[in-house]
Length: 208
Image (cartoon, rainbow, N blue to C red):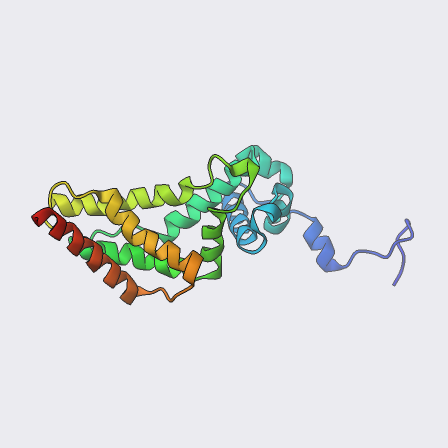
């Protein structure tokens, strides 16, 4: 292998490609960076998800990442909320039980993946730069699901005064606990049982 003028062997084509950031701009650049951020969070955790590492993985310039997101914290939170919003759409079937089953089945499927488990662990992983904003990316997604319960109340499917946040936390909390603590199986049968248990309890509690 011929040496370069500096005396070092020439870089391989693969290393040359890795060293040359792609000319991505606009939405293409944003999607590439967010996808790279989510992959790094899942495999390397918070400590390994630096702006420099994300830029390399996405094939963009580090300065482009800073220009768009300003800080590592903003980048990570944008990646997490985008991932969760895509994975957890809000259904509207006309029936509160089915809406909750579909929403929490999607959550269970996400938590049953390596990526989902890693994203959940981030909510309890300590990092000084995210100390004040680690939890909102999960709690805000669950708060959005409260609209499913409010619709059920408005349709007369649940008693007036049912606490939407409590219903959502009761089902979501059980899924989180299984993922973090026991590792027991997740899936639609479990979700249907949890939703039935919580909704039947809500109806029974109001009837006494």
